[in-house]
Length: 165
Image 1 (tube, one colour):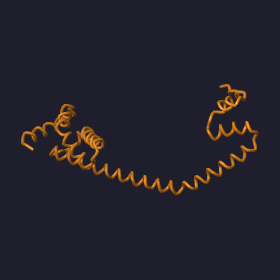
Image 2 (cartoon, helix red, strand yellow):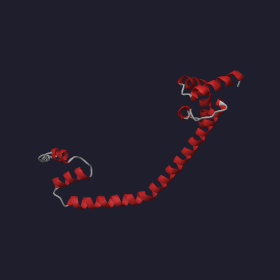
Image 3 (cartoon, helix red, strand yellow):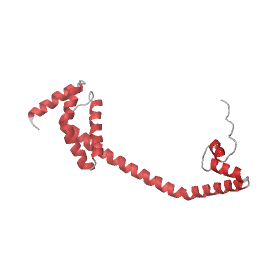
Image 4 (cartoon, helix red, strand yellow):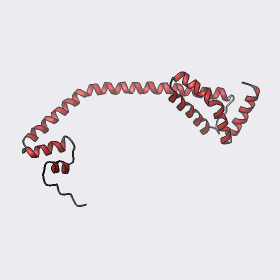
């Protein structure tokens, strides 16, 4: 980095600290491509790299008043590096949660299926005790979750009176 760019960075940081949006835009324009390249190199994902760079600049803007930055390029590079580490840690945590969820689901699925099968057997037993047309209405309404009015009208029953509201 040249001496002039260091002076320029110092002036930009001072303006940024004062809330100057033009200084922020200039910092963004100078550094976003380098930061994107760094993030993309590690992540191998354009979308994730873009999100990380956006998050870095968003954080820079939000913390502008309290930041004490000696070297802007090194500071931004460190922000990207730590954001990439957090990204990988979050991915690993999500993978572990997914694995645990799959294990729990695999353990409880047979029990759940048995419970459902028993419930269906009970419903079929009671449905078989109904007259044929009523059984069809019951099964359509309860098991296929169709509105009672719709089922009754399809089968030629009188429409069910609506409650007055």
